[in-house]
Amino acid sequence: MRSRPLRSHGERVVRPVAAMSPVQVAACSVSLLAAGVLLTHGFIGFVPGRPVFVVLGVVLGATAVAGLAFDHVSVQSIAARPDHVVIEELNRCRRWSHPLTLVSIHCSAEAGDRIIRRMRCEDRAWRQRGRLQLLLVETDRTQAEGFLLRLSDLIESENVKLATFPEDAVTIDDLYARLRTPPSLGQRPAAEPVRLLELVEPIPESDISAAEG
Image 1: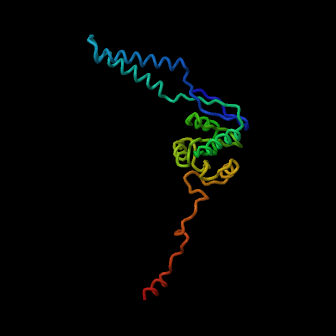
Image 2 (image 1 turned 180 degrees about the horizontal axis):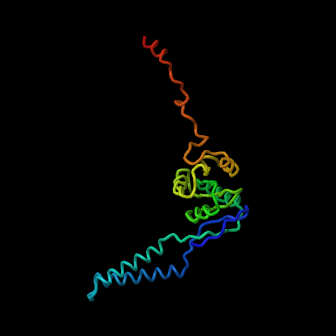
Image 3 (image 1 turned 180 degrees about the vertical axis):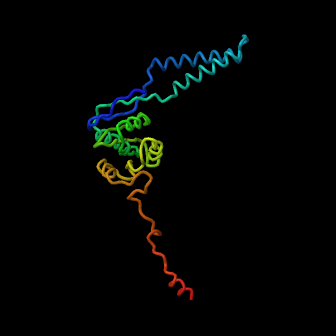
């Protein structure tokens, strides 16, 4: 897979894009067509060597499907300020009442590049003050945590911070503020109220005995 190095300044946003060329797509399509012809001869044709046609058709078809389904991804940069991208997506999510999650990850540039390859094409990423920032559109907290847990081979949970619209904040400034001091991945959000049962002190046994007496 091809990749370009992440930009360290704040004027570039990167995103994953399909790296499969039109020629490769055409080749896989032709292979699927040829596999269909071979399977047709193998199953309904009145020609000798039918098992050979079936085997060739299955192998060729499986190869073509794998070529089309395999996630060929590269990393490309687009000229856009991160704040402008976040504001645009935030306004869209606010208009349609969709969630959005900002993620901040402390990781190496190599790990960040591998993380971006696993993102969806509609998501965005950029480097800011030595951390990788992810913009996961149409993604609530549960979905974001599920995605981050699948990155456990690349990152440690204590190095991950996230803030979700509208659960944690509704403005870009508040989302960034939550990224600076939110709980780590899997911990309870600071804004979540504590249950009253957790604040009730246990009744002394002497008081219970006196009440029963």
